[in-house]
View 1 (cartoon, one colour):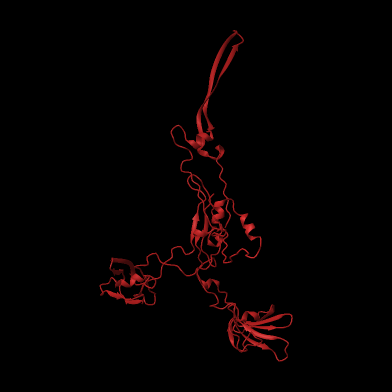
View 2: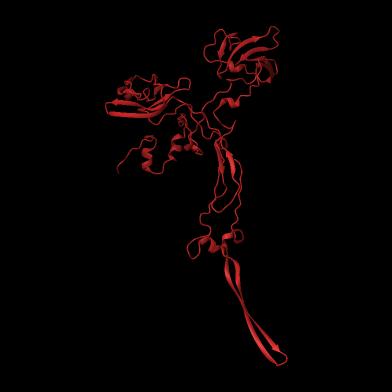
Length: 391
């Protein structure tokens, strides 16, 4: 995640609106002039007036003045989070059990730009898993005035619209013993590819608004090579038509071809010679046995040749590089409700421990496990034979 830091200073000297000008009245300046000839005195008085700037206290700025209006009204601070799913982490593969929300009456339609007036309908109602939907009959109305069609199972239905540019409403009606339901979806003919107004997920972010002023920041949430679903972005095309060998040393993998079950016609009690098998690890390979000089044992696993010598194993394979088709796009999902959820350790065992029956001190040892006569009577499903004697 990209680290961004913003500092906002709120103080009297940084907020221009809290500097106000007020009238200023200075002290009275008294001046006395004495006439030397007559020994008389004249007194003059003057008052200095004007305006001066005064910073208002922060309490006044933040809480509002006597009129109820704060100088910081409307001042907001914006935040931008640039974290994506890449920063969160990769999800584990799903088991494929992803269902639509409406499974009783639903459908999808597809089209392409090659035949933009031809649409294909698919009934996505869960007819295979929900048995009572066998009582439902489905009717399809393409919305262009053509006769409604009966929908049989999940087989796709193709329809060609008139050559005109307009919109239609497709309706799927489900007639069942418990009522009638309809699902409608609008389409536009001819079909055109969807226009993505912002393909890079670009935003322009202003770190602050209102009375603040700051330089905007542009950010792209989507860019080439960043967790997109376009496999073409991941192809390097650095491959060759002539294979080049890849060799190396490894440990023996011959036991990956071992099989369970009957061992008929096996070499050395384990492997069939020259017959492709699927080993216990799921590896597919062929065991060829020792060479004529008995210096190594040869076998192949998943298209790679192995030569087992006495102390080491050599593997050999041919490669063309990464070619188109080597990369497959698959969905990765995880139940977010279970993130950071940890269960308590659980021990499941089918091992039962039975007390020994042959020790001569067993009865005495068991008596040490009871505290009263009642426990003695109920102990071990009447292990002790208690006789009540009246006196």
